[in-house]
Image (spheres, rainbow, N blue to C red):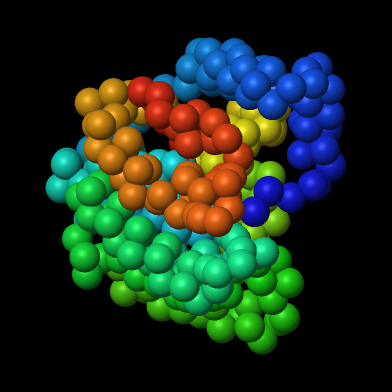
Length: 274
Ligand SMILES: [Zn+2]
């Protein structure tokens, strides 16, 4: 998770934050805008059938993106016996950069364990979870050789799995690392020379919901998933990521903004397809 400050993100922040001066007020405003945009997305969307894909690779730049962004979709696909593989690109080690006692390697180990737990709760087989262990916070600045290497690893997975679909964070999701992940996957698709469906899920876009307007209008299809039947599963998977949602002592605030996780505890998810 790494929100950035791109132009749309700044505009969204200015619009959402400028209207309210308290954290509580800002959160209510974010929720209200997200809800309004959800209504528009629902009108624009079609229902995603859980048997729409028989195999999928879920790409998570950080441990937790898969659960927040498409945990319900993953749980539904697995229940429908789709072959679901999850790959985590970074180790998540940068979530507590100034922590006095939890070193980046300890954070990475903890987040890997949390990812194992969360994906297990969603129903993904242990052997279908992969970690590329790139250093968190470096994806947007990889040099050409390193980017080629990471894309090559993803390409090898794609060639081996030949998934019908890739689920990954939206391009321009309000996070430089999510944007970099999208570019790495695009590169990997060229290397593997396959063309699965790309189904993009919002993560940080829900936090700056005006960012959702672009994919809403730009995408050929917006898919709606009713995930109420697996919401308890998604909630338990989210609860696995306590290192992100709860403070790690002696810090008193969590890595994620207050109220972030709760925005994903709703009975619907959206996927964008170009
Ligand atoms: Zn992330």
